[in-house]
Length: 279
Image 1 (tube, rainbow, N blue to C red):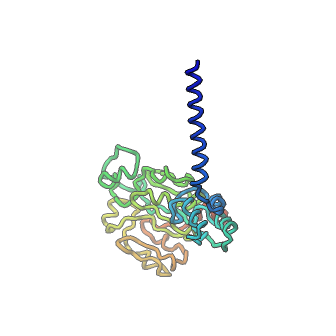
Image 2: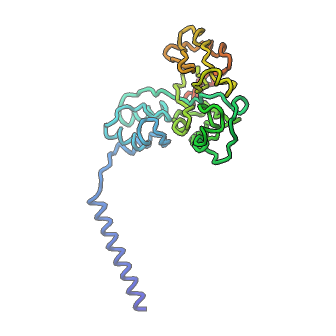
Image 3: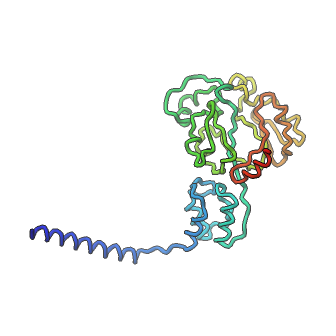
C-alpha cells in the first residue's frame, strides 16, 4: 500500500512541476498577436484557395493585419461581401472585387473526341496523363477523370460524358480546379465576359479534325468576320481579346465546328444578375 501511495505522490509532483513549467513558458515565451488578425481572419471564407496570391486565408489576413498588404479586394472566392467586411475592419476604402468564373476550354466529350487507347488505372487525370498523355487522341483536351470535380469546394464542376462541365451559378472563382488540371484546359475569366473558345488544341486543322469533331480548326472564319477585330488565330487556335470584344455573339454563329460559345457566364457572386439575363 505504501508503494502505491509513493508512486501516486511522485506522479503528482511531476505533474505539478510540469504545470509550473508550462505556465512559465507561456508567460515568458508569449508572442503578441495583432488584435486585427482574428477580426480580419473572421471575414475571410476559409477556402484557402490561394487566389489572393497568398498560401491561404491566414497568410492574407496576416499581411493585411501587418500592413504588408493594403489591397482588400483580393479575395475572389469571397467577392464583394468579403471586401466590404474587410473595409469595415481595416478602415480601408472599399474596392470592388473582379469576380472570376472557371471556364473549361474544351468541347471534347466522349461523343465527339476519339480515343487512341483504353485506360484502366487510377481514376485520376494526373495519373492518366503520365501514360502517353492520356487515352484521348487530343493530348490538349480534358482527360475527364474528375480531378477538378473532386477538389472543387462548391461542387460546381461535374464530369459528364467524359468532359468537365462547370455550373457557373455555383462557381466562386477560387481557381482550385485550375491548379489541379494537368492539361490546363480550365482557366479563370472575369464573369462579365460572354464569349469563350472551348478548345485548347494547337495542332493544324486537319489533325484536329481527326481527333475531335468540335476542335478549333484554325479556319479564321471568326477572325475575318468579327466586326470588332477581337479574334485572332494564333498557333492554329482562336483567341479572344476581351478589351475589343463587343459581345455580339457573331463568332459563335459563324464557327463551323461549334467550339465558340456565347452565353452568360455569371458566377455565384452575381447569380441574381445571371438569372435576370437568362430570363
